Length: 401
Image (cartoon, rainbow, N blue to C red; front, side, top):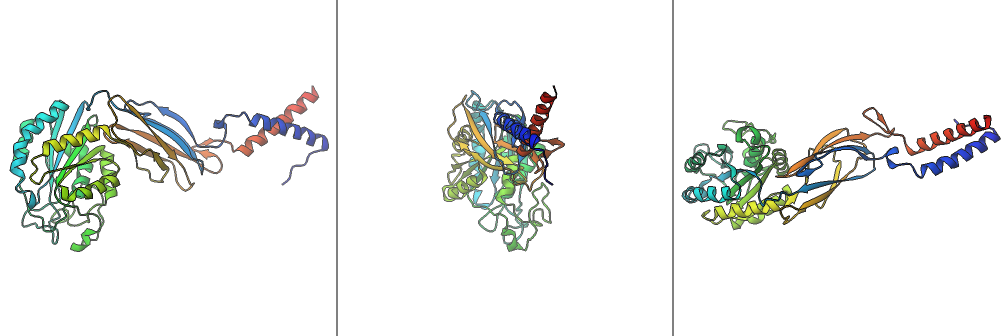
């Protein structure tokens, strides 16, 4: 339906439109229907701690996340969880590892006095062709929850014994997944500690899809229940993505202490995870203490930022994805680009700097009418029209006066 104006009114409207256009040129961008940060909550090691964001369809928004590395060369608290491969090939390593425990405790507590130690283990699914229930194989066990009791740690290592494992790959991914999902409860990672899992192995890993060899077709559900009889035989191995999500959710950083024959496999895994470190383990594990120290030095100075829980794919890029060799006391800045294609809903996601902290991003999606959560942001054309009619009214009012 068209707008009908007299010649006089048309002239007045035209003048008002010119006025509106000039005002339009100086309007702040926040008056428009555009993607924008509405508020932030300051953070400490990771800043800000929280972003509240409006996203308009097709309008990218870039925000910054700063990670401030403490002045100390190491964190004030460390939770170190050893995840041991107890398949048959590690039988000769166990006596050496037991003797290394005092040196490991001394080395790590000299670096971080407030360190807790824990132990977990894995072999493989106790079903052919992966493993054997008869030989005591299993997918995962927590041998010792995190503790500052050094005698308990030594005792837990002393009590380890190997099983068999029938094929070459083992259940490393399932063990990592369980470490993540059991982290806060069963294992006891502290929320204010730098949490690390050190996985020691000389073998490659099974992953999602391998279960079909044993007739296991049910996908892994990513929880702490090892379904089946024997446990872990009712569902497939997890995917790398499931492991990534579990470790990120628990804020646990992996160190892979692996023999040289499989190092490239785990370097590829770290690349897919987006965080973690790979160190070379000697064939008899005699360099375990040095390997762990090297891995810790690596993850204390290499910082990555990863989006967790981004259900609608709002995070389009993180630039750069990581920083290497960050010195104590330095700060690094990540630029995160958010974009909505209009198909998603309001969401909350996390931008995690593993081991350092996170930024929570609360996303409100602006629809085509400029509305979100009861808040209306006028479209540019609407603003221009309102200004024009406002200018027209003001012109008429001056004429009456």
